[in-house]
Image (cartoon, rainbow, N blue to C red; front, top):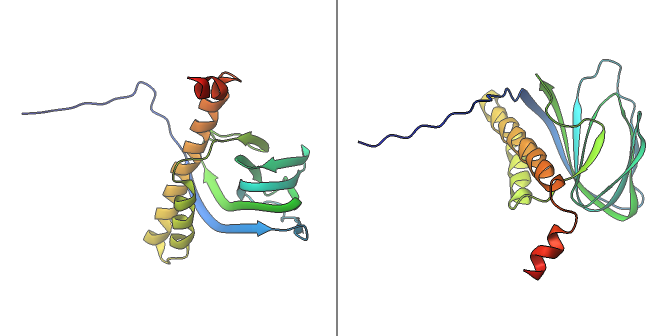
Length: 172
């Protein structure tokens, strides 16, 4: 016989996510979008920059520059404008609803190292999201929630690193 056991002393509710829309954008200098979402809109947006530079206007923060490997999660009420800041800005845009306790920063840009298979996972989510039907829609929502928490975990781990850790690792 063989048996294994695993347990946590800190079970955590992750909340639930309903992924609503996704965009992949390869913007140039003409890209400049003004938004004014209706009062009571409860959508959240995750903007994951993969290359270039963008500028996002968030009500409480003003202009926030987002560069490669940055992630900004903001509310529909706080998002006012977003635009390409240089020649190119490439990013994934996720619109979602979240129920439950929020375990990630809102209206704050964070630097998140790229996950090893991130691009492929985003492409898969993108294809699956328009698959139709209730069951089909739950899969990309669940996978997005997993990726969201992996981004947060990678950010927290990266923020604990010594500022010169990368250089030290290269020398070793």
